[in-house]
Length: 334
Image (cartoon, rainbow, N blue to C red; front, side):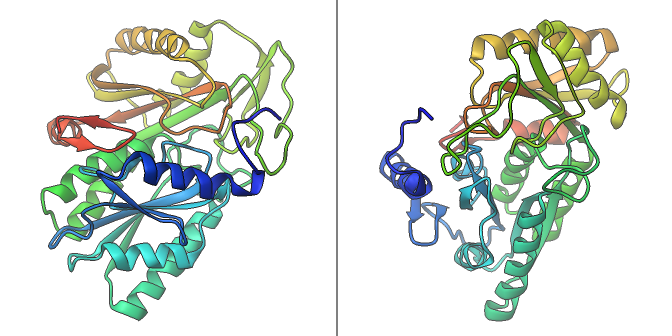
């Protein structure tokens, strides 16, 4: 195992110390509870937005805390859900009287622990909490970590769009309804060229031969739809995009945000090759790309591979996407 770490057991706590040291202008970090906060949270009259999950998917979620996105993010151990006490502490800390929205990826531990945290916060402080669960992965119906579809790339787009709505001062129910609308109109699918190595395990999660790829992989290394011989980028793009387009389904005349995400170990030169293939396929299908996003935003440590996400959008969603954002992981207009 070759990693830039000290001790495997200290990876998350030391990374959070690094986040605190790197971004004191916009973030504050509760190292004891492993929570990243927007520096000016809570903001009176603003709905608080919280997400979280296992570490190892950076910049998700801590890198999306700040103006125009999240108010707090809870960090679990690598690929392990945060505990309810963390989520309750974050919920109470960002409640400024307008309520709190939990944005939860559909992994069993995350869903269960966020539900417990909402109940605890309501009982302890009277905080009004609503939740939205993202479940955009079309690769499999159930996985090692979920009942139902996994929450993946749409989570990034949802946190940005809903963050802009909360910034405008919209009420909790309206913000929650918008989050559900985004989730309902987004689909994703990913693939892997290599495994990743969880520091505490010290060895790859799974093995892939040099001439193999896993199509439909999850962000924790969960098995995909099938293991296939390595193929050119144009074929891989079609393998990922075709199930995404047909699932909603997306239709000729639709406008979308097209998101090509790296899994952590794939360089941008390859991600842009993939985006080029995606753009050509969408053009042939008569689907208009309103906005695009390319890069490493929801990763799986150093896994090589990518995912493709489409989100059907209208003028309102595009406007919210374009609204100012200032976080370590996403920034424009601010």
